[in-house]
Length: 251
Image (cartoon, rainbow, N blue to C red; front, side):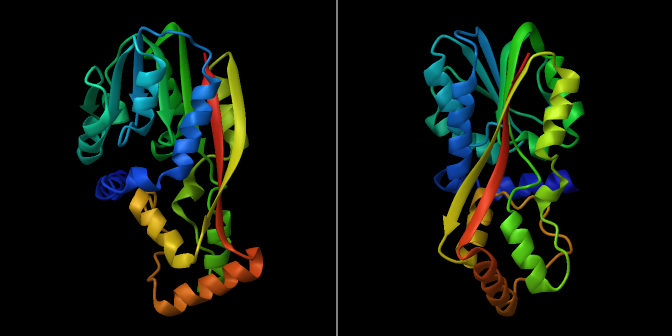
């Protein structure tokens, strides 16, 4: 059920995702800068979405065969509009990924939605060439901490956002080290500012990143919106959110 909710949220945001995915774009650029590989023969992208990273990969590796995968057919429809003709796309879940001996596997802002991280990493490792490289960016549970704090105060109860189920930065590093021998990790915090709480919530909707939603489930009445904004401004002075992201390469 949770997986279906996540898939529906991203599918509904397929036409608006990329124009609002500012942090995801920064993650992709920073991850590409960490790649220690010159000319892979084949590349697998997991969770390609609208093809934001796909196009970057095609430009960086003009001679590589690229297969981009995503479970949302609507996201793939958007990706096909702008990707080079040589890129192949397939609609599939992580469990359905085509097995191969991939020289490079990449995933940007997607693996935190895939469930237990160690099992996900083991699945990807099994498809890597012995000398292949895995690169991914992973949003930790310390994402949107400002929103969680202000909303909890406004609602009068502890509110957990979808990202509360993600691994922490330390947990991510530990899980990668248990699966791979050679690991390079960078922890980054990206800040995104908004004009008001409504703009922040609209951003979450238009990028499809609400996941399974808040727990407990809340009804966004005008009163709750106003109280959340007041708490936000009292605590942080502006409507901003932080995204803690682990960017990793592993062999």
